[in-house]
Amino acid sequence: MRNTHRQANLLAQEAWLAKEKGQVDRSLDLYQKAYSLEKGVAVAYVDLQDQEPTRSIILKSAAVLAKECGLFREAEQWLSHALAGNPPEEVATELRTIFKEINKKQGKRLVKIKPNGNKLTEVEGILSMVDTLKHRIGVDAADGRIKIEVPYDVNDIAKKFFDNPVKVTYQVEGRRKWLKQIQKAG
Image 1 (cartoon, rainbow, N blue to C red):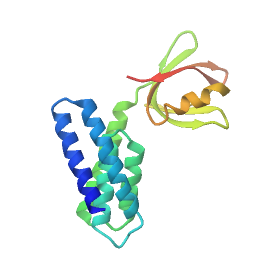
Image 2 (cartoon, one colour):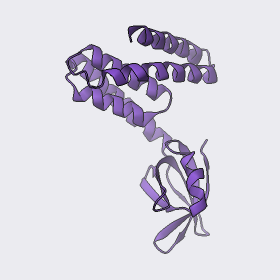
Image 3 (cartoon, rainbow, N blue to C red):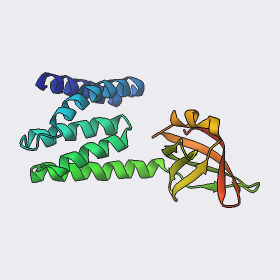
């Protein structure tokens, strides 16, 4: 596990350098590879409460890499696991700081709703829920979560956008909102 952790750190350093040089695609690719390695190590340490401070440091590393990959929910989960143990106070402070950074980044990604005169409304945010049984999606926007009904045949398409920034157009009919279009934001 130590070798895998070291490999992940080397890849993360390479990713950081690529990011500094403006090589965004290469940087993301390297961060994803580093996270894949570190995630395996972190899974092995989650339940090892007696392995502090190593445990919380490994989980913090997984959280940082997940954050760099844009996987904010996964990053939050690693941070929660780390804080649920008994990390040294210095590490706990770092974990809380990372939580704040993630919340700040997510806040920047959320955009307010833009109503349109013809009853179509456009919203950008994070697709945080796809309920295939009730045929609904949930978009976390700046004004809160918006639940939108989807046609039966759109569930599988919506799943592809899960946990990513989306731009959604929906029509309001009474108290229900019906999906008209969903696409990647940005």
